[in-house]
Image (cartoon, rainbow, N blue to C red):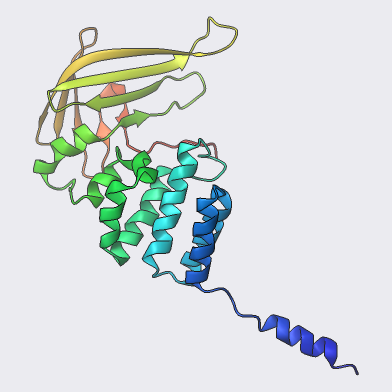
Length: 230
């Protein structure tokens, strides 16, 4: 029996698995070259090789942020919730990562989420933090169907609220979106939010401890509505 093939097989099977550090370095080079999908694969492999490597988790979050900015949300699963999960884990492993995250433009896509506010130290359980959370988050409802309107709410520190609506233009053959904007005012007392718009009945709702804005007939608004079909 020729032992050479057996020895070669054993040698190949014993080839060392790349370390997390090596995988992260390879990912960083791909990132610098603008090969973000390939970089993401390396960074994710680094987190699997060493689940306690804060930098690798951070790099996954940042690269997903870049892919999201480039509009590759569904194909790369660059959801804001996923970005926040990796970033949160990175900060848990190394508190210094938060300082970097505050300055990183790759992570601008998550600034208006509840999750980012929580990372900054705010809490949904502290009523004194609720004004900041309400004002710094973009609250949205995505349509239940193609023809349903998309709604979003933004709140300012001056007591102003803006309701934006986008819905399919059924009068156009091109099927574009009709957009309109309503300006109103609001008050926040404890968890109770009251909205007033010139052409609507007054609305009252609640900013819940789970981070949802429940506004009765207008609906329940969240910071991370579903974005892609299952």
